[in-house]
Length: 438
Image (cartoon, rainbow, N blue to C red; front, side, top):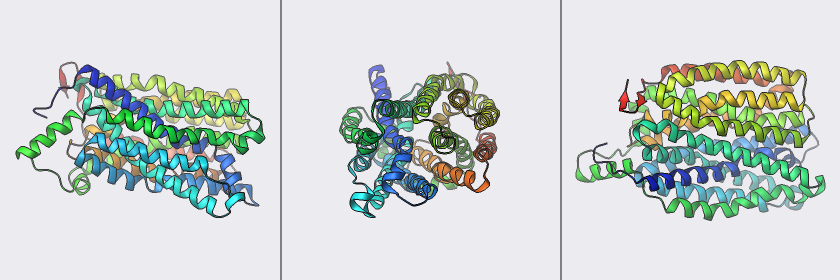
């Protein structure tokens, strides 16, 4: 946009740190629920039927996703109206409240039915917060990035998620190794949730000290000068004027979100409950697998700048489809730490190459006036429909079919949707050192 202020290199670095750390804090808070789902089921959803208890816990996990589109839309509208910075500061405060509630919440044995009700409320607050986090942090990163490196900068959004999952798995591993089962169940599992109380003020302080996005500042100045009209109905504008972008990014987000919630969230639960593996082995392999994503996401973003988004996305999704089927089948046939690690490392490698370009694709197909809203709507709809309930649906599928292979068919269905979405995406310019080139 003409007249866009140029941020200093120091401010760009500060924005990257604020976005990555703040986003990692948010996703750490959100991820640890899944890592401690087995214990939460026992403490907050007691039932004579262990399967029913786990389903209730996973349904509560999914409840957090039910409000994500609402949080994404409202916080996206807020970000498009008052700025990215204020929206991001608000999301991290909300997340710390929801996570802190879980950390101090009395169990079902102590307060009865109020315990699961309050657990659901805490998950709703978490879901509302994280609904606006992805689009806000991504938009901030992309709008501060140099024009020819936006894919690389945007990939740090996914790095921060991988970092959060890695830290969550590491914390779960350390607690499992160093505490007795009694201590872990009594108070140890609460420690990472209590950390969320501290994360709120720290994250808010980090984010409140960065500048507003230069593209948003330029857009605001042009609105004030009368050169352009402010978009007063961003949500309607997104669906009316950018239907192809909405459908394309929605499809692309489906394969990404299913990969996260099947292989990062569901697989550890499945390995422990269905295949009888130890929590120590499961948490360690999850930690290693998410480190792979953390390492390779920036490379994927860089390659998308150099060769184009679709050139990276399409082969990555195809490779992921093949690797997930072969390695998951091997794992359920011969469950062991080695076969679990092979699934998480092998699948994570290919996941990295469609996770990395996702943030830039979700944002660059929409103009700055509706960018935060557009990214929030498509991403959170995909997560609501296919991601948040993935652990619940796949647990039910395994139980209903009697086949441990059932989850992989869910994954393959998401692959088909993802490929169609990427093919439908509007033509996206390839980034070169000289700027835009088709």
